[in-house]
Image (cartoon, rainbow, N blue to C red; front, side, top):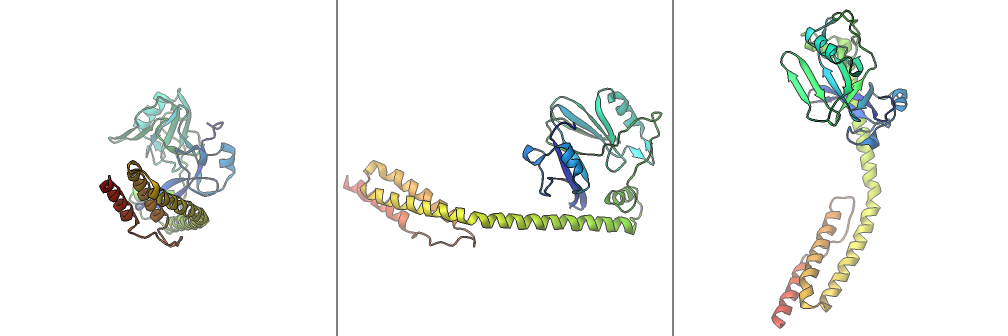
Length: 282
């Protein structure tokens, strides 16, 4: 897995009243688990300090079995132990999850539909072609006597600890609330920065739109000139082309970024009247 350029960074961001792990490029922009152009190498991802950690995009025949909430008060649940024992010889990596309360089993598996099991067990199976990424911790997990494992839970003062408090029905301490507020503020700052970048990119595209409008107006004038000399059988095609160009001009002219003089609204009707006159003349 380390040798493959399928790595991303990730940040915690509020989505639908909960914090979600959002994949990020090294420049802070969104990464996509289906676009290799937004991935990077393990070394580059590991050396970056962006966000909360690193993640690996599933693929190249490698999927993941995600066991959620299987470590409670430092004790591995029997159902999780059974699954780990079943697959540990085939696994490429077994690690504790970022929250410290789950386990990831990375292993080779066939493509196909994923699975989600909620029958007292919290199991999610992501095949290589699922288009997903997994937040990787690198904290290797070993069965310690098959039952008890060392606790490595996130301490208070982190968003993960706040979620843990809520799952257990405990009051959320002020340190954890402050950490959640900080994570939310960071997420909003990143979104504002992305919005500014998008606005700047739109501004750069204005000259390109103007160039397109100039070309379209030239083509429109050519069609009007050709219509006066066209044979009857060519009129319908020219009228259709004129309609298409007018529609494209109107589309490019929308919004305050580009101001232009719109063509007269009755010009298409003029084309059609000429077409009818030619039909009568025949």
